[in-house]
Amino acid sequence: MVLPLPPLELVLKGARADAIMHIFGPEIYTAVLTSNIRAEELANGVEVPQGVSMTLPVSSDPTVINLALEGFSAVQIRNKIFP
Image 1 (cartoon, helix red, strand yellow):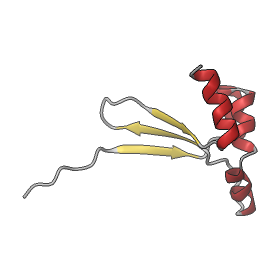
Image 2: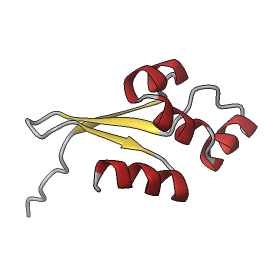
Image 3: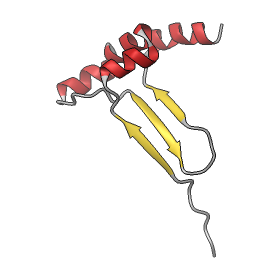
Image 4: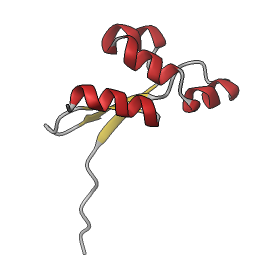
């Protein structure tokens, strides 16, 4: 029996706060850095925000960027992107 291998990919986490501001702008920056997720990271001594990640597939599939946002911030940003 031959089982298919899962797709190979590299996940990068830990975007610098200044890079978040520069690349995504002040709204995303504020949403990421004021989230409860970020507060928990800080309480646990995590200096670099983990709420932004990039998944780089080994194949020709597209690269995906994920943002960890909370309810209200996520809805505000969604409404601007998908009116």
